[in-house]
Length: 501
Ligand SMILES: Nc1ncnc2c1ncn2[C@@H]1O[C@H](COP(=O)(O)OP(=O)(O)OP(=O)(O)O)[C@@H](O)[C@H]1O
Image 1 (cartoon, rainbow, N blue to C red):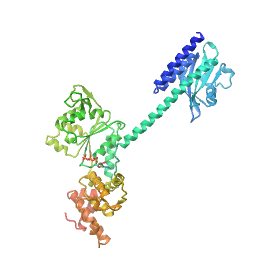
Image 2: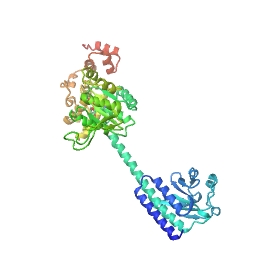
Image 3: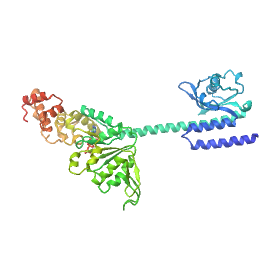
Image 4: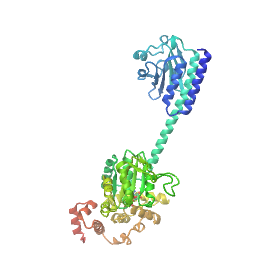
């Protein structure tokens, strides 16, 4: 081939590579392979390699090796300064060696091991911001000829292109990493902080970690405000779906005529107001988790459709006959007695059994009094920040008030109570009057005036036990469990403190 023709071919290849670099950042390895192949072909080499510098180990490893023994060569690495490539990397300079036998820098071990006779080498540094990050080598000029200075110049041009592609890819990877990290931060901050101290919640969380691993439906039951939604979040967080969507739906908050379209979506023209297609929550939750809060409120007509999603993983959008397939983990929650709802005919029995595969019952706050103070402290911090206040803590009388109150509204009631206290407190600690708990009008501190410590403690014990017994409808076994004492000791205290049942 004439020289002019060779140059045109080289220019065309260069332009082609350039356009690849500008369009294909993600698959850098195939781009570098392409650059190497072209460089090798246009300089007339039999084999070629790209070695990358590892600054930590000060070694060069074969990222790409093309030619008859390419795959075997890839197992090797060379030290910085070792062999022709090592020399080029260390000196950040190009090199032509047309007779390796004559050059003491040549490192023959790799050629010998793979059984490939090397005669000539053309090697140039691949640079990013003037720093050598790798070496491109072309080996054995065709027909036993020598590599020329012109070959070297062309290889340097290709190497500059490779350096650009490499730099772009590194930046892209870095950006992707940052994005992933940020996404992770958003993901974790989407969960509410979960505060607890009681053993009973510890046990529940151990169950959560186990059941989170499967994809079967979970039914969370418990009184209003016990934290069912937070448990649903924990299940999703510990599941294999945690990187994907967690979609919450409050079945009680969506008007009955909209619920089907909200859950399953609709197509344009399905009804008068359907001016565009609408993606339902189930489709949004695909591969992730859907949390159906207040499932007991789901209209009976929707219960049949939900059952089908559980059984077949598919549904139809409103106004469409096409089946939409989804892979969604369903967590449902209720504060109603669903068994009773089934008995009354308000809830489909088959759906109840399908949902109740993994039941999780959340105990009321009064059955886990150890959680009251940590929760109160957490809410105090939260509402101090929200209201720009600096209330330091709770007076001992308010601690007693919180510990002895039955919290029928559970954690939500405690949260509201602390929020109110933060707003109305006039000193830097919360007193019982700030908490506005029902039947807490009298200041407990007054009751204890003129008492000895022993009398005050006994009075507190008496009231506390009375309250707990009332909470458990006089059941001493449950009351002693909640108080954290033996049943026999409770029975003795009832007598000693003259507690009327
Ligand atoms: N362990 C906890 N740590 C911190 N906050 C909690 C905890 N449990 C509940 N809460 C808070 O209490 C409030 C009520 O919790 P949640 O909404 O999860 O209760 P729920 O059982 O789902 O109530 P409902 O049955 O009324 O839907 C929320 O503001 C929640 O953030």
